[in-house]
Amino acid sequence: MYSNWSDGYITEIEYTANFYRELAPTHFAFAALLGLVEAPPTDRPFTYFELGCGHGVATNLLAACHPDATFYGNDINPSHILSGRQLAAEAGLSNVHFLEKSFAELADVTLPPLDFISMHGIYALISDDNRRFIVDFIRRRLRPGGLVYVSYNAMPGWSVPAALQRLVAETAERATGTVGQRIEHSLGILERMLTGQARFFAVNPVLKPWLDGMKGQDRTYLAHEYLCGNWHAFYAADVMREMGEAKLSLVGSVLPIEMFDDMTVPPDLRELVRGITDRALRETVRDFAINAQLRRDIYARGLARIDPAVQRERLLTLRLALNRTRELCTNEFNLAFGATLNVEPEITTPVYDALAAQPRSTLNLLADPALAKIGAERLLRTMITLIATGAVQVCASPEGDAARRRTTEAFNRVVIERAQSARPPRYLASPIAANGVPLDPIDGLFLDACRKGRDPIGHTEERFLAMGRQLMKEGKPIADAEEARRELEARYRTFYERLLPAWQAIGIATDLVRAETNPVRAAG
Ligand SMILES: C[S@@+](CC[C@H](N)C(=O)[O-])C[C@H]1O[C@@H](n2cnc3c(N)ncnc32)[C@H](O)[C@@H]1O
Image (cartoon, rainbow, N blue to C red):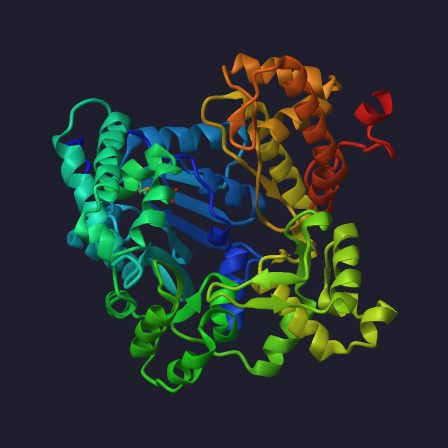
């Protein structure tokens, strides 16, 4: 299951080719801004290193979004490094470098000082020695003022499910067959424990929905999460101490919503959390209040504090875009502790309409008389709420748009061509958001057809079937050819009338000139 070079990490199956929006430097910079800390500027050349980059989808996509910056990614698995290099070569990216190096071997690599270091799904899945190599790497390579992003399985959210991880690892290790078969075997044992009313399951009702969730998860993901030889879940205070050895201080979460206690901590506990002055203790108590399972934190090497007046000015001028199609923008958001957050439609309707047409700053939105009368403070508060809830996203500054357009277009062309492959990179790059946008394989085929001037339905039918796949509706495969065609037509309508305009607003597929009327609907 593990190779002798893997340091206890699973190599029997390659990891899934993932991208996480939180990895974008613009996200790091926004988290720092909310935390009143200066970040390295992202509108001029900078350096970014992704530790344990897997297939390098994120490193490549972000390199396409920042052609003036230099990106590096390392991974111990040569197959992962090969796919990263291949994607970079196909997309013509010259500002990204993939190193087939373990964390230990990074000590000997020549690198410039780094502005950003990121690691997603790494820190809690490696040995104590490897964590020390990483901390040492950060201590030696990160510039003063640089930011580090680290995600990890957190306590206390994992305290009960951690026992399942152990049972999966123990049972899978003794099973035979492929990794997938061994995972299925372990899931079968968990299921028998549940239905046979094992006392551990009976006294921990959280395990039933947890197991239901596992059954729906990608088996490759489960193998990497549950079968790695060094599995941990950490308390925030412990990671803060380890990061402290690299002179890092916690800035906050990369997820904007987690920077606001009123949107995450149950009301009766806010005063308790706020009253704790020791940062490590506050984070630990807060993690109990929110039952943290995964922390996604930003640390800084040295805290260059920003004045609140400067923060306000920067927030006002930050370019913003919708993060979903206009139709999916709502005024109601469900919060984790069961409450609902309502935003005022008289503010959000003109905001959503304006951003659907073109990304712009809060200051620019204030030029609309309907929003001007609301006033800068109320509008800014609403915009921050919309960013925190994920309805609106932070964009890069407009100056680099033209250069980013060229490199992201080349990257997106490769992604669209690969929509038909076995393991497509499922994200397009936006030159305006300087971030990734999820791409469903069917939408990828529609986009491919539009580019090539082909009938999108026929093209998608032909290619999708050629991949040996079946169209699904409400979780069930569609067997009837006529019904499958009707489903494809409905999905194309959504693609053409909703998704494509939303993508074009953030600079994706702008070469496609959209007719006033959906050509497929007009013909049909
Ligand atoms: C769970 S995957 C996460 C990959 C990627 N960061 C993501 O989130 O999609 C962990 C990655 O770390 C790599 N890895 C594990 N141990 C390593 C080591 N000692 N040195 C370098 N890379 C390592 C694995 O090969 C794998 O690609």
